[in-house]
Amino acid sequence: MRRRLPRVGPGEDAQAAARAAARRRRLRRRAGVSAVTLLVLAVLATGAYLASQSVYFIATNGRGLITVYRGVPYELPGSLSLYSPYYVSGVSASTLAPARRKTLLDHSLRSQGDASTLVHSLELGQLE
Image (cartoon, rainbow, N blue to C red; front, side, top):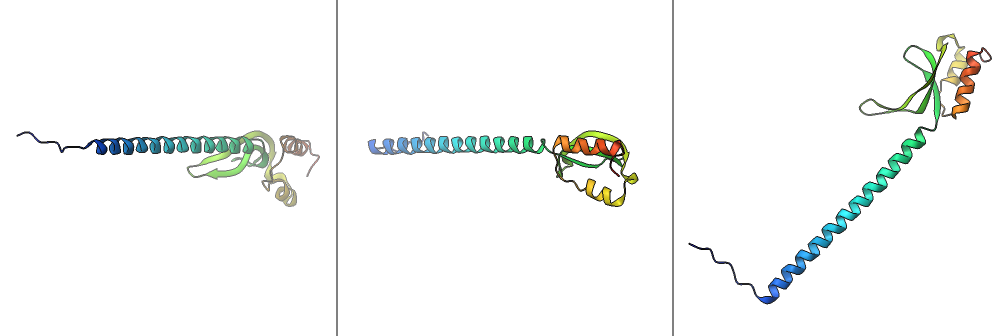
């Protein structure tokens, strides 16, 4: 047996088409807002990463050597560090006086020149 379709009046077709058009507009608007939001978040994340890579700090590496790191001294979940070694000196942190070690290895953010100059002075024995 064939199924009968309900009869649709002329006004009902126009209403259904208007509802469908309004639904498509809402969907396009949501997609546009989502795309703009993702673009803004990507720009902000890229800017934050680039800014974090323009600073340096001094710390020790796994072997106890004074090291200049590029980035910020933080790790994200999943062992994703926001820093990388820039320069490893041959000076062991254990050879420094406790007061010098405390001020040098405090993870203060520095410029590249400041951090490099400080570590090179330490290597030359100008700092103790």
